[in-house]
Image (cartoon, rainbow, N blue to C red; front, side, top):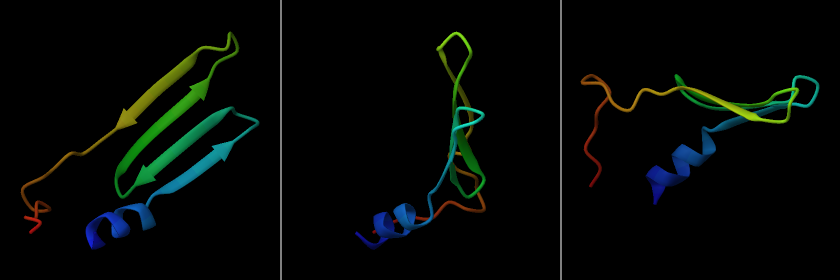
Length: 59
């Protein structure tokens, strides 16, 4: 449960109503949702799922 608490504590949400974007960041990971002029949603991601130096076993 502590692991989940730490994850949710470190998530940043940035809403920009002028640019019509929502950025969700966790460490080096980022998800961006954009609403375009024709009202379609554009999704872009920069996700690092695991790396050998950062991988930890959770018990």
